[in-house]
Amino acid sequence: MNKVIDMNKVQKDNVGIPGDVTVGHAHVHGHYHSPEEKKKQLNRLAKASGHLTHVKTMIENDEDCSEVLMQLAAVESALHSLGKEIINEHLTHCITHAIEDGDTEAIEEFKKAISKYM
Image (cartoon, rainbow, N blue to C red):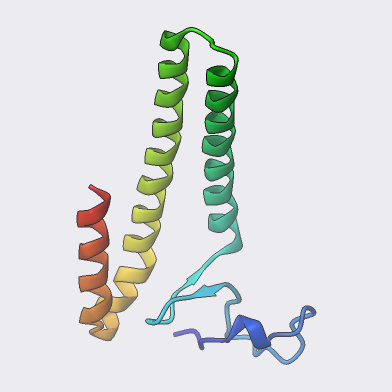
């Protein structure tokens, strides 16, 4: 199992980080999100943000309501895709590790988050 590193204390050149440490975002239960996964999630969020900005512009320009609604559907779809991706990532990594470690608190937190998300 990887060691948890406080990313606020790590030098930018990663000097002194042991070889068995994965650098990324640490949860309480010690899971790290890979830079690749974060990039995918941020790209999806940027896509949703772009759609939302376009909706704002459309409303400001008094564009056709049907077109605004279609653009809003694109925002919702992009956010839904991001949510599914985060759920999948969390189940695959965080919850798997939580089960292995007997971390029932992390499992309960995830159940609450899923309930609010749905």
